[in-house]
Length: 106
Image (cartoon, rainbow, N blue to C red):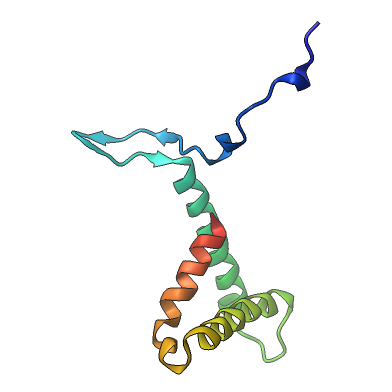
């Protein structure tokens, strides 16, 4: 009698990048992978949330809870850039917030 819990899988299997749609052109592999799928879904969710809050919600003066969430993420990243780099780092704020959103979505 075998115990199903005795099988130990590799804990690093969750980080393997597996092609979902294999696309190869000669020596170049541009397959659509599980990582690309999750990044696309997370970016789409963030864009849809931002659009629904800021465009469809008309950016109300008194924010609702979703608008508060977006504004708190924005202010958190802005404060982090200012405290680490100072006033000169504000020019790089747009790159930092994009990178943060992409890394959080992974």
